[in-house]
Image (tube, rainbow, N blue to C red; front, top):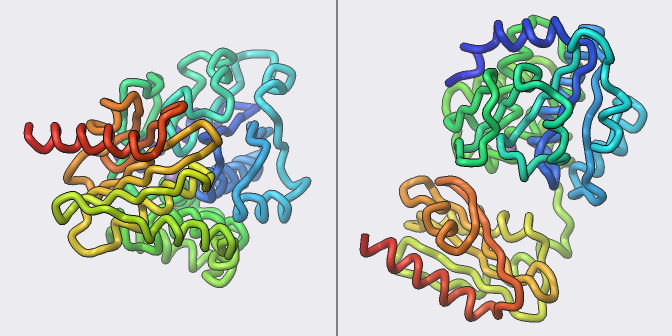
Length: 331
Ligand SMILES: [Mn+2]
């Protein structure tokens, strides 16, 4: 379902609410943050009290830059502070969930307790799963590039002048999730980018926000040098047992592997802590990542997913993964 089909209901819910809580997934990225701030900007203009729920203690580089630049501009609270910021009369609270639909991925899993189902709206571009939160008003469109594109569509329907800074943030989220307009990009994605550009979005600033740390890049490159191919379409990158990576980095490497000719499915197996071996998977869509990783106690959707093991060496994790891939291939 497309967001435009639900825009009336969504806007009506916004109109009725006084205090609006906005929350995205754990480990904020620029799509989660950009869509949250883009909406908060518009809702503030409609004289709503917006609260951004952020529990993350650490942020990736781009998110850190934005939060620093906007310090004091938004009301950011932790999950624990929800209750004291609720509007006390007439059910005028609203919870907006962006860029995920799964409870255990939320910044604050307990946030749902404070709201009736009718007071929760979900806007997400990942696939529906068993753990998807069931509320009457949700738009889960996994054809669209990003949460930022969804929010851009909604903002466009308001016919308001968007501040160039927020247009830039929304564009950054789209650039991130489409990997520079190479994945999940169609004419509507370009149209949204065009719209943001007319609002003053700056590609140069987007580039600045998405700039990576050279050391982290070098670490990732090391992982790219140890890649095993299964058939000609599945790539598995393996970390060395003494290097510890961030989970986001594994996902980024898996993304990068999909850029190579013939590769349809990619996995990265590496340590994410002394005792944890993690696997991150990505797919172009033909073979489902979740159907493989679920057999290894992980989760995700068709396009991407992850799992982790405690006290399992990398070689053993790779072996388990290969067994499941083989089994799936035979079916
Ligand atoms: Mn996203």
